[in-house]
Image (cartoon, rainbow, N blue to C red; front, side, top):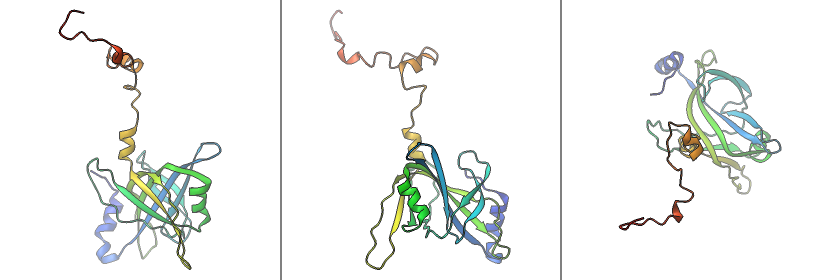
Length: 207
């Protein structure tokens, strides 16, 4: 069950009387093409660049990240699921924004990790109702560039799949080889996997 902060819940409860402004945040960690080092960039549906407190998708702690605005960020409604269903989310971004071009062309965004957060803002004070809460954790499955029609602005779509698929594809080093199995209470599984296909099994007769 997802746990959210008391301030976030209070803002939702009081939204009918006090009003509420909701914003979406997207944080992408790609790779530098030259060095292979991880590089990150954040976007949000606001119109200016801000440092925003969010719940880290990995540690669960509060971290402050820089999010860039005015990039025509479009985040669809994300359904909540409680099982291992593989979700897909398409994130839209401006094609002409230099920061977006850096992400999809300057860096290697293939299989980049992505965190989507929801931020609630008090319309009277303009202050956030606590740190932004995690709405989706996933990886980039592609970054196609849409070709605009004449006189229209093109866009870039990041096709995301939920992080659950990465868990299914992750290698478990304790079970990936016979050497690994030997460290697990003398488990012999896989010991002869490399030669068993050549064995002559004398079924129904003496060996």
